[in-house]
Image 1: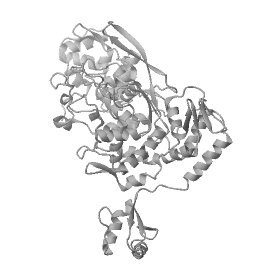
Image 2 (image 1 turned 135 degrees about the horizontal axis):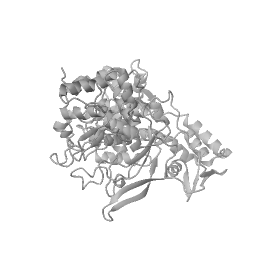
Image 3 (image 1 turned 180 degrees about the horizontal axis):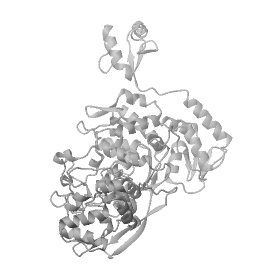
Length: 599
């Protein structure tokens, strides 16, 4: 049984006489001096609906909000971090002396005691105190071109303000093509991963980054290289969704992975997202390498990742799709909206550099922005954005002013996490569907921006310097002719379709960027390529088996047990899909034949 006070009388009896005298002074009456009489004096003037109504009316707006928040908290708690995030500051608790002790409490102290609302006081307050308004999140329709940053310049000993240009990645369509590209790469057996951690090797990450559209979020190499993000995440995401698995140290596609090669990419991405939310293959916090103590003894105190992800998804589900939100604003909203979570049940197991001096258990060390904030960054940037649910705008993490400089042992760090550069994100069409904002998937339309002209001779001319994303898209679907000039050709369009670029998307892009109907020649070419693309369907890899005797090839191909597992190709060849290989080999043995290794 808990010995914690619950009623007003129990809270008052837990105080010292000096504290009771300070509370009694709030009534402006002569108060007794003995403890029992002080408790009775205060209790008589607080308890009861009429008395509480009068006291409530004397509170200012922020103090009333503090009481309301505690009143409608499941445990009647006042959460200072939540309140600060929602209201932008603290309520007035009264004046403090030079030792930071509360020597003249405000009347808020008659309601909230030791961070809680007494149960009997709460019962009366519910009769007239309405629930607090839900937290709101500030969003914007458009992104700024740059982000304004401020930091203290120790050389000049003054605040310095500067602008950093944002790199913007629209991930919705890119993720669909990246998915197919990574699946095909794994199918070739060229991706290695650790049997223990299931994480891709450095060489494997480089191989994956090379086939990603536009590369990884940050280019490899250079000073303070953040390292792979998308290239690191994809193999784990595919394993979590049972689309890929390890065979020794090489990744290979599962039967489900082979089916995903021909399935609609949005549906596969949604499945991966749903599986990732429940997987334990990786704790995203482990990717914040500067925070140590996450293995060994400290691991047992880490909270379940599924619970953290559930809270973040709830916050995303309460956000508005197709609107940009600053990461700092979203982090505030997670706290203000009550979507909070813990990283560890014992912060003394986590540290930076040294467990003795850089321990996060010290007051002010393991704050929200250090732990939960970094977890949010990793989850959103490396996983939700890689899967195409979020468009992102970011800068290099080393250019973000430090919010961790007060910690011990951080002097040599370029950044606390590789994700610190994430400045803004927005939920796109795919994200809206995966987060159940919408019942069906509706791709985010291309924003109409007249920067191109599609000519009758199939040339595509730039009217101005193109954004990097537009230039990259054109590079994939058209052949470069000269600076700022491309040409639509059957060969390049067929290659684009082969790489997972639907003709409908190419048509929508050209229309949106030219702001006009496409010329008849361009429309005819796109129609022709779309028709050709519909004639053939990729069904995955297959085995080509040579049979020495043409008659035996015929007998096997039309055998009652084998005819659904293979097809005759020419007179002496059988074709077996990779998905049917095991069944084909077993049935073949039952018939008295065998396919040797390498055959």
